[in-house]
Picture 1 (tube, rainbow, N blue to C red):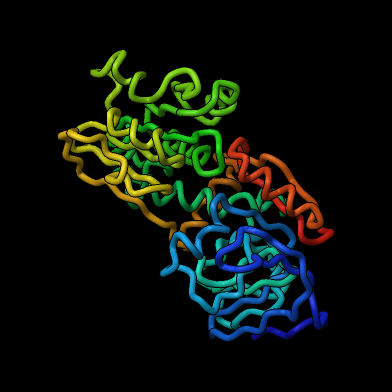
Picture 2: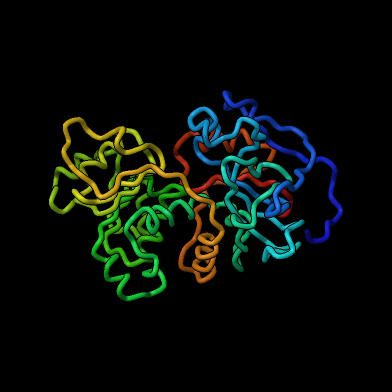
Length: 344
């Protein structure tokens, strides 16, 4: 470990009241002590809650160990305090990451991340925007380029990859939100020529600026009805769903036979319309892997000015309840950020 600077004995922290409760409380606790050889102690400056995370312990019990300290907010931006000597990260480095969901989160003054989760914050990106990036950008990256059929080489100008990507039609639901806004940007950057964004009509200008070629206002026209109006022209090779429910059910009308339907909300087969005979190459629900290697690639794109995070609102630590209320309202236009330190 690198040399330790003077540290307080206790810190402020948010804590979920219990596995069965969605109530969050403000408390004081000792600083976390590294217990894994790849642990990195970080002074947190900003963090971001994730929709539904306060229900993970009930909804996904296998992913949340019974002995987990229930600190919410797995995304962080902060400064390295201690790190393994061969980690590539040094005391004082600005870093950001997504902490794996089975370990305590970052809604506290100091948090532990693993070396494999971390990336250096790119030049010019502040703490707020850095905290808004990891979960959303990583989820979009993996949905498009790992679970989906797009080739990431297209982002870097590979002509063969861009030609292949250009032939694919992509639709994303929740397109103005944290994940959806990254899907739009990355798909367009990779060379996709038809990126259809499903969102509220008041967000049309924003998603078009990110790269959407067409916008479907779900408040006026359900996806299935929009497809029926011109079925031949409205079949998609890849659909990425963020919303679930009836919206995901409607996506079955839009995905072509042999296409790919990816949801980060609900397994698509659970809402497949009864009697529908359509075989896909892949239909799946997936949980993001917190890979610093992917985040480092995204950081390069941010530094080059090719992509950017979208922030809905920023809240003081003492106003954490309002931040979670805004998140659960479902109307956020991007990420909701909680400031942890005065530096943010």
